Image (cartoon, rainbow, N blue to C red; front, side, top):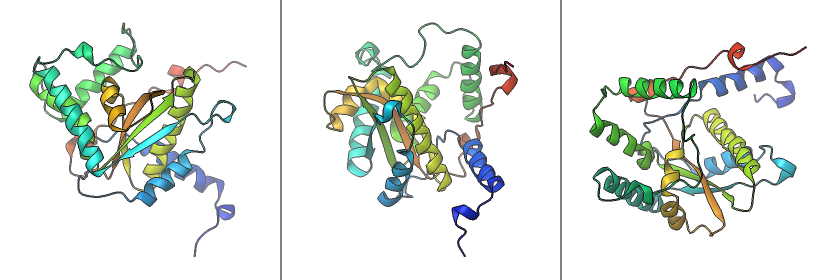
Length: 243
């Protein structure tokens, strides 16, 4: 017998939502051959579209890539990144569509970034100075970590910084709706350096800015990299209660 939403207790809803949020983390190894149905993706995007946006502008656009389109994008971007790694191309040719990270890092952000990086490399047994191994792991971004589905999120150039806040909330909904359905995700800012290639392959109009990529699929339960769980600061660290 199916329980209607009206008969689900507040405690049950709280536990389900909290569990979905706290169990979500970036997955960096997917089951390559386990497909995700179009119906499932459409359901996820339908739920995600209920994200708030300033004056209900709903400024997001989502490109869902799989099959041959996914393969073309992976091939072109991996080739571009390989040329950078082999000094056959100047990395400055591939600038981000916008600055995601600061030009000058300061504490505590640089400390958290380093902790995250070394925790990841530690799981993969990559030691300091092993640049080739680090480059190979970075390249995995541009293979969607073997996920069968890639998502690219864009906004119109005409929109202000608030549109990026709106689309970020929509992306969070995508990740949570996916997790609730037994799927996993990895949001990827790394694609932004190659936005010209990506947008060209997507046949996106000239007025669109790439905001982020995302891998979507079923997590590989045997991959050690998926054990990475990043720590969170306590509420006392980032909050002030003013009475």
